Amino acid sequence: MTTSSFSLPRSAPSAQGVDASGVSRLLDALEASDHELHSLMVLRHGHIVAEGWWAPYAADLKHLVYSLSKTFTSAAAGLAIAEGRFGLDDRMVDHFPELVPDDVDEKYDRYLVRHALSMSSGHEQETLDRAAAAAASHGGDLLAGFFTVPPEREPGTLFCYNQPTIYGVGRLVAKTTDGGILDYLRPRLLEPLGIDEAQWMMIGDVEMAFSGLHVRTESLAKTGQLALERGRFGDTQLLPEAWVEQATSLQTENDAAHRAPGAADPIDWQQGYGFQYWMNRHGFRGDGAYGQFIIVWPEEDAVVVTTSETVDMQGLLDVLTDHLVPALSGPGVPEADAALAARLAGLRIPAPFGRGGFEGVFDVEAGEAVPGPFSSGGPVPGASSVEVVAADDGWTLRITGDDVDVTLPVGHGSWAAGTWPAPADGFDPVPFRSAAAVGVDGAWHAELRMIETPHTLLVDIEPGGIARLQWRYPPLRGDGPAGHALPSLA
Image (cartoon, rainbow, N blue to C red; front, side, top):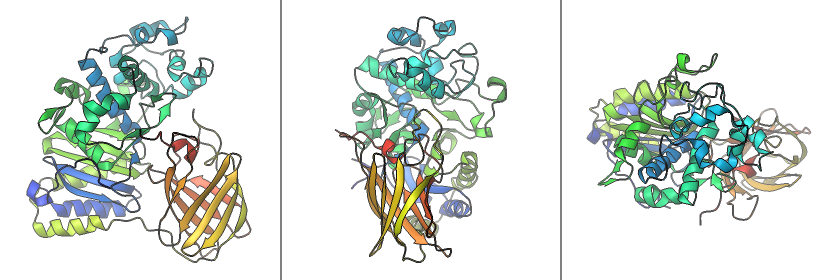
């Protein structure tokens, strides 16, 4: 399978003034850290000079990019505004009169599209949970629920990272284009970029907009290069240049003086916010939870992309900047180029390996449910029993319970490919790569990697004990693997 219908040009690092030894030192630093990278791609002067996937992650697999999805929604908004479908200074309530309650807070009269795009709705805290709770009495409509949550401040006066704001923009794109966000983006942006694999989690009939997009690493690199080139890709202006300049420059201050009292974030989350892009101390970026990054360094004519599973995003951003910016000063030598290419080709996450000889049927002790509007109980909602059966090259794992009956192959010393069944027609099964081993304590320890997301489900079973299920780092929606099934591509 090719990574896309066409690919970005590749180049040796030294040919683009990049010191491959510096990239190797980055890999050393990553190996010595707690960051688990799934992919890395470095572009210079429009060429990919370094790329690697830590097996079992691979170039042809999509990845859930969490809030990097917002940059695609921003692009859709920029195109729709250029086509005159709505304006930056339109009032959001004017486009959704059917969703606005009679007692809506009067500050929504001054809540504009630009405030939704720049996370400056006037709310002092994230409203997603409150909006979702209110939606239950408004036909299940999240945007209707949002309009019931009054802003504490005047729109445009402070920064607050707030998912329903950009969800509202996604709904606006869908409403004014008579389709979905992907329907609108495909002919205008995705197809010209050669992005043919994009799938998006839905809320009802519309894409989540603030999260949920799944694309390949190279697709992220293409959109990063598009931002670097101010909307131009090759010989074609795909996004309005003025829009990209606005989106990737400061629209809202977000330092301590421009946040609600007590709000605090790492330093690179206080450098200002554009239209769904963050300002860095160096360049700008789009980012998603657990280390999904598109980092753009205009001064170096460079783009860096990562997919990963880390909770220390500032730490990952620091290590990338500290090692790659000096490497971009070159000059580099061919010998180092070859050594780096070989190292990148051999990246892998070791599969658990130890003794075999473990079988049985075990009751489930599930971890706590992930709090939030998509929670439905534990890492695998409804799971009550786990069966482990030995196989020639590992095991077969079966998880059963209320509305759950899933069988996955689990490798011993290697990653076995399997799928979690789709919850309904029209959705794709959820891919997994799984491996396990028996530790010196006699317990069976499995890693079930939900391979097109950042997440790993851990299964730990002591002999004669119970099966403990827990995400290493929990997904931001708590409805288990089945909740991560994607609408099938038409």
